[in-house]
Amino acid sequence: DNPRSNSRLRTGCSIKSISDLGNYSEYFQNRESIVPWIFENCNHFRFRKSTAFRVVSIMDKLMATLLYYKQMSTAQKSSIDRRKYYTQCKLKDIDNMNKLEPVVVTCTLMAMKLEEKEFIHLSDILRSLHLKTSENEIQSLEKSILEILEWKIASHNIYNFWSQHFYIYLTIFQPKMNLFQFEN
Amino acid sequence: MEKNNPEEFKVPFSPLLIGRYKMIKKIGKGSYGSVYKVEDIKDRKTATTPDSPKKYFAVKKMKLPANRLKIQGIDFTTLREINILQEIKHENIIPLVDVFHINRSTFMVMELMKSDLSKLMFSRTITLTIPHIKCIMLQIFYGLKELHKNWIIHRDLTPNNLLISEDGVLKFSDFGLSRFFASNNRPMTQNVVTLHYRAPEILFGANYYGPQIDIFSAGCILGGLLLRGTLFCGRNDIDQMSQIFKIMGTPSEETWEGVTNLPHYVEFEETPPQSFRILFPGIDEDLANLLEGLLVLDPNKRLTVEQCINHPFFNKSPDSCDPDELPMDDIS
Image (cartoon, rainbow over all chains, first blue to last red; front, top):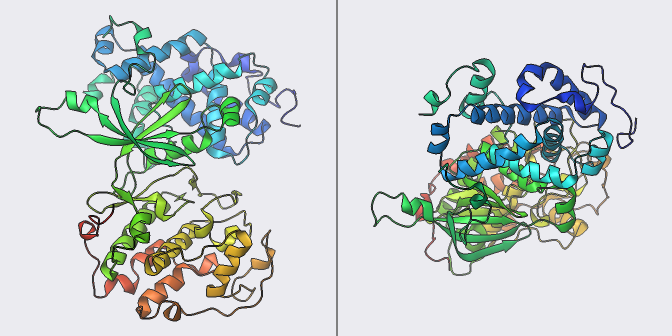
């Protein structure tokens, strides 16, 4: 049970390995199996529950933002400012990766840095999950994710939910709603 | 915009930082990195009148230790600082305007401030009166109240990290060591707080501590404002403890329950506590009482931030001055 060993996860959920996570566009459809996997994964590394909550929080926010950008029309894309356009360019990084695996690992790395007192080396996380992505790719993805989230990585709580995460609520519960009507 | 080639947006776009902030000069340096004064070019372009004033900001370039950079990506202190500053919006907390990343450095854009409390505190040419001290301390307590209300401990409250704006408003900065403390059973590191402002429970190696450590630092700042210097300036942990105990008395199980069980507890020669009215002759009884309440050794007996704000010292004459009445003009 050494978290740094190359052992399989003690998983009881439907996702048996990181390669089962699928494409990021299916995140919200598969969320109910991905979240328990994230918790087991964090438990495997002996992370605190708050770290797992933080991973889920960052993932939810990121996926909602990605869907938000994806459903933009060309006209809407052209109306966004230079900084957001830069963010848009960064989205290609995620599009190219296509899979959730490196994204989950990157969110875990960020959550670990925010919540844990002692850190596990990134290479150990990658090795333990049998993931072939390089450390450099994860580090570059970390920057992209932070840019996409506009560096807003604060987790949800009852006080900031409505002010900061309103669009996530809309994306999860009202996916067909036109978000631009709220932005304008 | 669509016609533009995405390659064009690779950073750095131009000599300007992310095409927006023009570097003016370096204004500070610390363990965290460097601080630059910048002009917001975009704001100038979008200004309605050509005569509108230029907008300046401070950009904090976070330094990354080489080994950490390669191992774990963006530094954890930077991430935590951004996380906290994104969450807290208060008059006495420095606002975070923007964040961006260029090559391997993270830049945080913040409001440009005139000075910090240490310049005011250690200046030999500035006279600080009781209304000035009340104004400074109340602003510290309001900032702390906001942090503690949001379950955040600053963990590095020093005069250097308390910035003062042109109009005398004091703002907390440098949240690199800050963290949330909602859970009591979560051990925390003892490598926090600048030695001269460190609470005795941290010096004794406590793994579990709370917002009381910020109150102790506030007490050291109040003592420093009266002394116009550093109240406890030890050379190392042991010397720091002996300096604290010389004034506050040596702790024992009677005065501080559980002190002997702390990991780095060492027995000191027994010294009785001294009165602050002897240390600072002529100070008000309420002020001495407040100082004593802030610097109590047992964290459970230390004043809370609410008790500090409602302390009789702040309710009696002379009243606190307005922030813009602080002697800011005399700071070089």
